[in-house]
Image: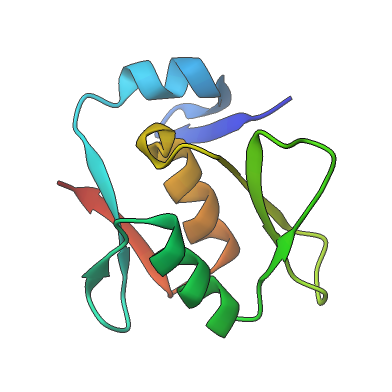
Length: 106
């Protein structure tokens, strides 16, 4: 089961990826806080993640671009096509890298 946890005043719930994307009306961008750079490609994201200790992970699923850290069990899984890089993926990166990235409206 994968998705996004949505927290509101009256509680929280897990939204599936497709449902979460439908709820997001605005286009979002991932911002690297140290430089203020908007991540616009996987090559720039890979360079930033590499500097943070993340390494490419070559698993069984060839449709995913993945990163892992030796110091944790976290795995970042992204679609191969950057045009399918959504706010769900961005928030996954933000959660796994606190105070490093930020998601904002385009």
